[in-house]
Image 1 (tube, rainbow, N blue to C red):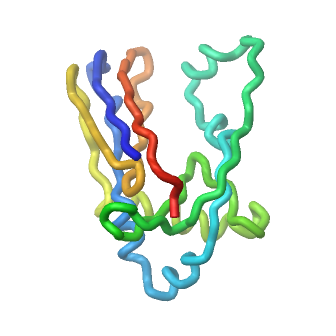
Image 2 (image 1 turned 30 degrees about the vertical axis):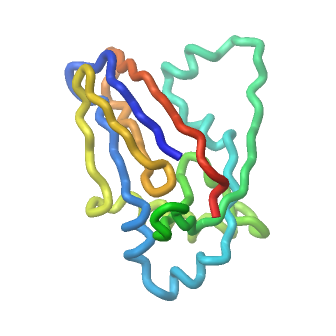
Length: 168
């Protein structure tokens, strides 16, 4: 449902987080595109997120005996927020692999368009962290992307994520 980050240690520069409004990403689509994506179901896989791990993440886990599992989930491409009733785009460049009933190759052009739609500058904001900064966001209608531009420095965050409902 929601996540919160509390900054404990931040680099002297960089390490910001980009937030994107998925209500706006959906609402600015043409009526034809809204009709096209309305019935689609996205197939999401944790294995896709594994390829985006940072070098530091890989150093921490490489050589460990634990075998990573690939989790797969299906969610509607357009999600209706259970409290506001507003529709939001609900795909994610780090997890969405394809559309149900389509191959990855067939899905790629439309997914790439939607991924670009989500990060248009007018739908995003950049949060610059300071020690003790807190960010709280609704995972049902916002996405976040930490900027990994602080090589040689640490960024330590405490995260709390609240469980939510099944997307519909």
